[in-house]
Each structure stands twice: as C-alpha cells, then as structure tokens.
Image 1 (cartoon, rainbow, N blue to C red):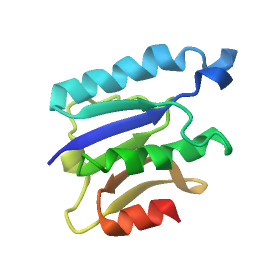
Image 2 (cartoon, rainbow, N blue to C red):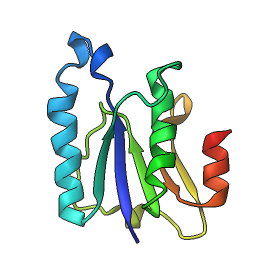
Image 3 (cartoon, helix red, strand yellow):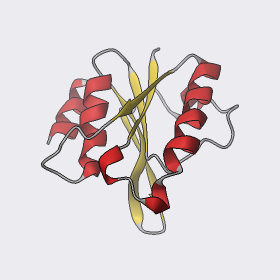
Length: 124
C-alpha cells in the first residue's frame, strides 16, 4: 500500500500568526513519512479563485494518481505519536475517514482511499 500525507500552504497569505507553521509542520510531517516509508507532499494554492482550504481536496485528487491512501492534514496539525502507522487507523472496508470533534465533522484531517467513490466525492 502506498500512502501520502499532504498539506497546503500558500506563502502569499501567510501572516505573522501562522508564519512558524511551515518551520514546524513541514519537518514534522516529513520525518513521520520518512520513518514509515510514506510520501509527503506540500501543495500551494491549487484553487486561486477559491479559499485556500479548497486546495486540500485538489491536492488529494492529485495524490490519488500515484498513491492508494492519502492523509490530508492542515498545516497547523502536527503528528505527536510517530509510532502509530496510518494503516492502524483504518478498516479496509471504508474509503473515507474524517475527524469528529465538539463541533461535528472536522475536515482538518481526513484519510481517503484512492477509489472511484472518493474521487467523485471530492470533486462534487
């Protein structure tokens, strides 16, 4: 199984309160990927006519061209327990996993399988 972790960062809209995200978030994700043999991809703004958050969906669709599973993480998310593999977070009979918090579904992190269903879901 080939995994990728992707994040989105638009340097053009990076303001002071988020300027350290790249310096902490990117190496954190890269080290985790290196440890487990995953690929890390950092995308810029893939949807310039929309809010930057839309770029994660287009990034996931792009990563699906070569990877079986894609874990999308906001840049301000870091991996704390690097011993837990992505494979251990999922069941094989699902194509999409999303976080749930006090406010309901939270797409700041989601794990998606490269499948016809998932590609359609992300496009629509």
